[in-house]
Length: 175
Image 1: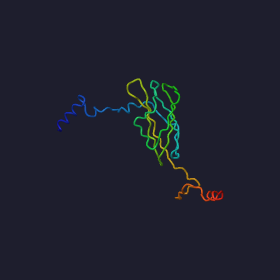
Image 2: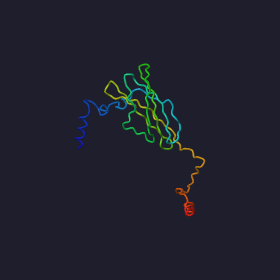
Image 3: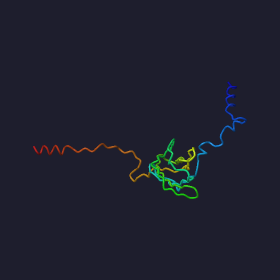
Image 4: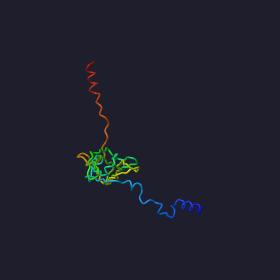
């Protein structure tokens, strides 16, 4: 059994190489990263359930084309993406710059992190490059209690029903 496993490993190695030589230096995710992304400003805190807008700027080589947000396998955790919008193209120094707007709502209290978002690009070569936005951390707070919100448990009253005795008296008076 061990001899068969060793022979299989030896057959997988390139001629005259070692196991370290058989592993590529870059993974496909690392080699696919092209350009850069930065958020213009992020909120520090917000109310739970309320939406907030993130504005960012994507820079990538002008021979690439921005496809949009890659939602495949996207797990936003305690956040929900409500919408994305990609702005007009600007070209400068061989780079294309596109403003991006992302509308997000948070649904968990405390410090929450919106994971990095992957923006897909179309390139002339076969590999599908991408630009990844940095993660955003915000503090999600509950709404402030109102003046009448004491937190006490109150009796639940049933629906109001009109009294019947005035109708009965009116009916007797009519007879």
